[in-house]
Image 1 (tube, rainbow, N blue to C red):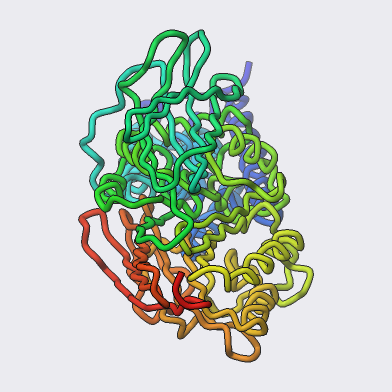
Image 2: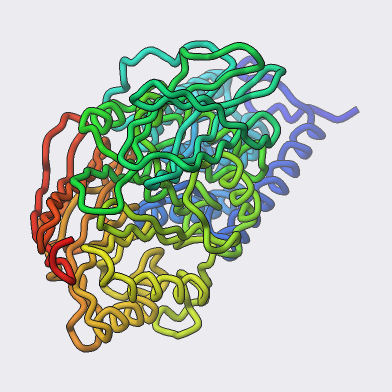
Amino acid sequence: MAQLNMAGDDSLRAVAITDDVERRARRFARIWSVAAVAVFVVLAATVGIPHGPDLEDWERAVRLGAVAVLACATALAWRWEGWGGSIMLVGSVLLGLLTSLQHQPLVAFLPVVAFLVPAIGFLVAWHRTRTTASVVVLATVVVMVLFTGSVLAQEFYDRGYGPTHPSSALPPPPDTPVIWMWSGGVTDTAAVVVARVTGSGDVQLQTTDPAGTTTTVRGSQTQDVWRFELSDLESDTAYEYHLTLGATEIPERSGTFTTRTTGPMNFKVAVASCARLGSNGTVFETILGTEPDLFISSGDLFYADYATSLTQFTEAYEKTLTQPAQAALYASVPIAYVWDDHDYGGNDSDSTAFARPLAFEAYHTNVPHYPLPSGDSLNQAFTIGRVQFVLLDTRSQRNPKADPDGPDKTMLGAQQLAWLEDRLLESDRYAMTVIVSSVPWIAVPEGGADHWAGFSYERRLIADFIATNDIDNILMVTGDQHLVGADDGTNTDYSTTGNAAFPLLAAAALDRPGSVKGGPLSEGMFPGGGQFGLIEVTDDGSSEIAVTLTGVTWEGEALVEYSFTVPVAGGTS
């Protein structure tokens, strides 16, 4: 039978353990701690340190520092178990706090466990030579550290990933078989409606025009998601729509959209990006209150970096579209949407993302969109009045090669780049061409940057194409910057000849903490959550159109405004 190691006065001993238990605890702690350090080092050297969306540079440095301290504490614990185990305990809680900046506290507890468990093992082995009072003090400190860490983790998560502004007070949508629905792909004669409907029976869409004429449309079904392709609509006409399930109409859930004209028209487009998953922010109400003709989501419609299955992507769409404020917006305003990284394949993702095929399948099933020139990319184009909109897919074709100034490193891919050039060559047919990029355009070239600064060769190629073809009616809209701002063209020209300047509107973040990325912008940069952009076009058919760009908060305050006019090629129409 193993003997007890009874150092000091037996009456002062804490919980007595055998030599065998002590050896096992020590061996277990050493093996586990070395394995934990090895795993974190391998992850840091290969796929990067474990993190979520929007990892800031200081967070990366502190997190790597925390792992380094834990590694040193592990080595220390082999000689001085009390000191090493205590430092590991505090270090594990620090690592958890940093993780909670991006992940829910329960998820953030996982890296805590990686070092907390061996820390306890070292302290168990150490406690044998200590008095009961010492052990009680240690136990109290451990409990206090863990309790304080859990409270702070929730606070960190709320600040870093929780709502950035007040939630909407709108009631939830009525409880009907229609779980969610939205419209998009609206032209002068066509539109697309997509809805998720539960229950048995044939699902049909009914549209009603201002004269009261009702038309029934049949759709296509993918599981319980229905897609309705509407055609032969009247131009410049407001339509109301609702669904029927079998012989039962569901008028409680209805939507509206208005078809476009092919000639001059005044219109307003809201544009924004970057909303946390399940956001019900007041900003969506504010957008609806501006009465836009279209809402453009330029990426990160939701944050679902965790998604590794079609079910998870589907759930992300549902959690987004069933929020009261977002549901109200999409019921009244059609959408044009192209993804960025967090709703595609994870932070800074590219064409190699594991989730790439799943993201495509989920998009094609759940999103009403304009025709896609390629089934392997989401780039799409459409017109409103005399303005052409060009939406770029800056993720799914991205080549992650390291040289930012090399011809092989591409954000768009050869096919999409050629398509963009064709759209630009057609700009003389329109009063203006609006290019929507999910990532910032303005930034100093930087190797490894996740935006156009990291793809400086391709950016210069596009700018030179604009300059060479004397295209002077471009507006660019960018997302991902978590700020609103505008540029008058002072900083947008990256051509070798200096003849490719154009105005730019940066519009984010719907519901993510503010941050500065890229820049500068001539009219200012205003970081913050609960923000969006507005593009207002006044076109009376004369020889020029007037454009106003505005960056707006959830309270309706205009943080930045820039206006300009664009001559119309060919004069009036």
